[in-house]
Length: 98
Image (cartoon, rainbow, N blue to C red; front, side, top):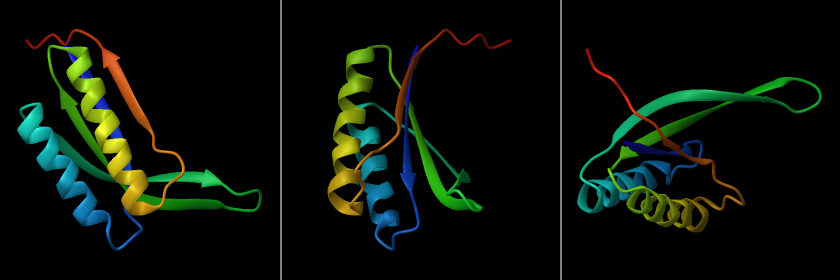
């Protein structure tokens, strides 16, 4: 089943509202979501910078539904958190549960 992920930076005070809007979108239009909070790091040439983020994951049998949901979520992040780029990923895989 295709799985989609969006990474939302949470350093902005409006990030909680943005995550809740995306979670609502995914719940209404796709059927549900899972949110994981964590940290990501990058090197600025002098030191490692760590920043908090939320990773919101959704899955649906139709990859077009996942893609459309992520496109809308990306716009929400860009418009409300002033981000130029937003990391999204779609993985079309089969998960085996035993």
